[in-house]
Image (tube, rainbow, N blue to C red; front, side, top):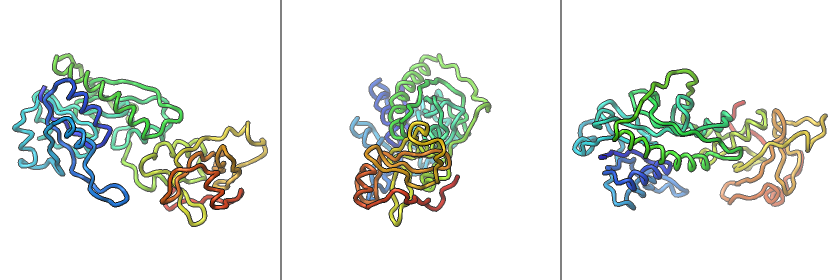
Length: 321
């Protein structure tokens, strides 16, 4: 099959590699380099790097509006358009380019978690199950007909980085089957409908700010959901710290029944971690990353900073209950 492949981040790379392995003729479209890292130097997209390693033709596009921007795609005469986290909204002209159909790989069980951040919102919502969906793209945001679906359980300690990596590999296999079925003419698209539909908007920096008035269960989910970016953060004294990993403390085991948590108050520090009161229960911090330093245990950080039991973690601006 002649396929225009559109993708940008690391999530899209396994699908690109699988389509190349399967022998399809590929034209790769990705976004231009973006500033990244401490020096904010322009870095090529993960798909750009992978495509170069595969010896594939790559087109970097800031926009796909206008005849000049899509001229190369038109002349390629694709059978399919395959999209995996490309990052740009595609207009009708682009969607109508392929001979067969435009196909999108989405990391959720549509229509649940339509939008830009389905993996993060899967974790924020506490979903026990997720998966990947291939769909025939239309002009809506993740509203097209469903083609194939593969389900998987969400690990109880899995964070957004780990879940994205696992779903990217699962998605590559599902997309390969979808392309094969499209070539054979055996796909049976079915409408999504609106029952159970939710929207997963792009996260903001404030989505990582912890509000200790929330239940420990919700805060633990938040820590996992914002791993990578924007990161879960709170302030102790004058220092802003990123919480890398945390777990809910089983109250019945570690606390007297009459003991009540005070939101943000450090209740205990030992080699197991740092227990902090929340609006409901205690959250044990397992790994911290102070600004400009590496990941460390809360006990080691507390010794270095002489953090006492009873001190209060503060909330950063924008933290909401």
